[in-house]
Image (spheres, rainbow, N blue to C red):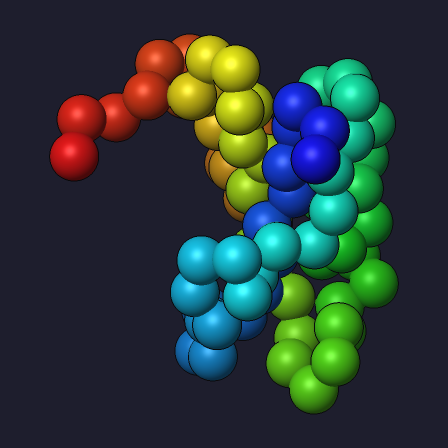
Length: 77
């Protein structure tokens, strides 16, 4: 598994967790491009991708494709 993980899915039918896992990448830029492509392509399997997130497994930061914002620190659970 590479550092940057892409998750994508449908707002209406999210699969949840690793079921929304799309791919992993070595760089932030590669992962962001894959996230944008996942939403632009629209469909994976039987559901449409309305959203995509990139998760940095080293820092806990994540990127939201819809808002194009990075959350630079992990959120408290």
